[in-house]
Length: 364
Image 1 (cartoon, one colour):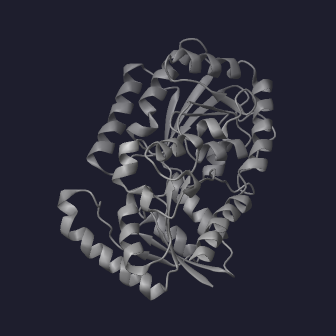
Image 2: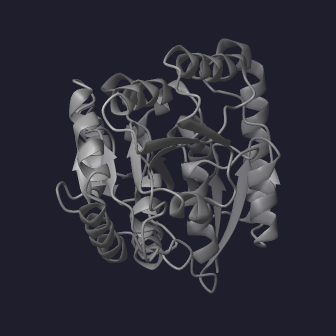
Image 3: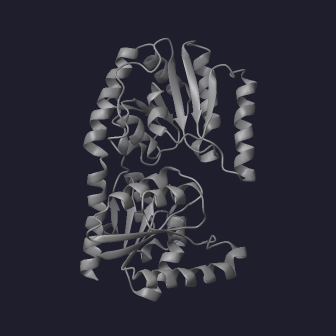
């Protein structure tokens, strides 16, 4: 059995990256691999992993590149090395590329292969800063996230594209419209600038001016940080500015995401990520913008639409067209479910990752 150490971006909350890591460690071939997940803080994700009987350790890992972390990061790296040695880790895999410096420290000390997962859109400068050239393998979730790696000089043969996955047994399609008298459009994710909920409110205002049957849901909550709290407040202020309180509902954080998806007729995502796979698995059409994994995951015109955010009217027009053709909308949702079954299954996703492990361990 091969012990593998995983570094999680977060332990206190569960976002898309945490879900993907959970899918991997819960479904990996435990006859051959023994996972141990390291989280930088305690909370919801740590509790989730432990309930699933996934060995989990909380170890604070301060941001490597911040000056104030200079002393703490070396102390944390030493503790991480001790932990890896205690676990007899033969391979280290970070689910967030910001932990690459810790991987490099482990690689130097332990002489084991390291794998970095790219879930964000990076610039070539960021690729160089976080020394992706030192990784034995990098997993990108889309062609777009692979591009800056290659531009920065990372060997393309060391980059694998593996799309996000979803539990198809949990996310099931409904047998009819979510709300016969209304058409409900949702955006899912932490309330933060990257997810662009403010732009979603702007879109809602344009749609509401032309189509009265559409309702909107903002699913998710802000992290308890000054910047995120400020952004969440600005989103609500924008709703008040357009007097949309009656048609935009804030659900807060949802732990029952399969049900939350069932309550929608359409998902709009202005970032990217695993929510696309979740919505499609739930039989919902998806409108996304050409960013990150979106263009890889949505089959334009079949499972949804990939539409530029600027000008906003193009997304508005698509929403209204779907709202006014509920049968057509459901037909696209059915195609989305079929595509999810073919492209986003957990078993195939995990096998692709295990294939990487096997090659690296054989080489080592």
